[in-house]
Length: 387
Image (cartoon, rainbow, N blue to C red; front, side):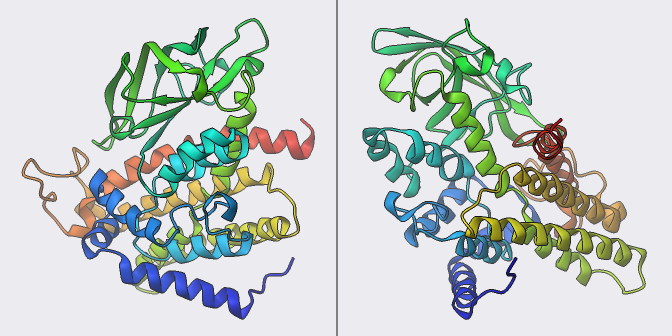
């Protein structure tokens, strides 16, 4: 494994970091630094900046309009990005449905959907999880029955992030109930303005409205919105999740957050020792990233080892948020009832402390998001131990 980056690669890193820093709006940077929730308008405004530099679709091949970064440049881009208080782009269009479309869709679908995703024109949400079908996704119940040139979709999705802001949903549905569960699943694109769709908010423990229930009642979806082959959606969905997990370690953001905590403690503080332990764990995660980067540069695939990135990355991010709470002590107490006061102001207390508790609570989701960590351990055990 070669861990050295070329001078050209290091110049690329500095170019990305400096360009992003120069174009990051001050109000968005401050919200991100304090852990405040961004509005849809904030996120779209920042993503317009990324799109203008053709960096919104940073992982896309050049043939589909992306920058065509090799694995090393993509890694360095993410490291430069994560070193700043820049909000991560909404992933549902860019790193999830986008790659499914350019890998499996027909040319007409590529021409129709990819430019709008790449140019920040359309907001997507993910219709995967259902009541009773989260980590066991093959148990989903939402059905799509062919009726002429449409599918008629009935069912329910849950934990659907930002469905209330979305223009489109990519959705796994059952098109055949007579075969084994995985073989009867298809991948549909659904316009969220279609009659029969009802969205109900789910208020999470941190007081935020980010996720939703989505009910689909006799929703008519054109057959032309089926991606790939009917019944092949399980494979497309698995490919999407593997791609998602590879970028979920968040190592650069964790490194940035640990550096910030380090500034706030004395060298002989017990908190300094805990920061050191987390820095060691983070360094091990970074070396795993570099090992997988070396594999990809050699033409290989990260495979189930991407699950290890997801597990350790999310656990470290949660540990950092917990340590921040412990360091703040009483200043972090009592602000978990919501992100803002009724007048839109922050709760009383230091600005840095106001969002610590909501952030800690919100990040509890990370070990479930993208496939629960328990399931990821089973994936790795099956692949490496043959269990």
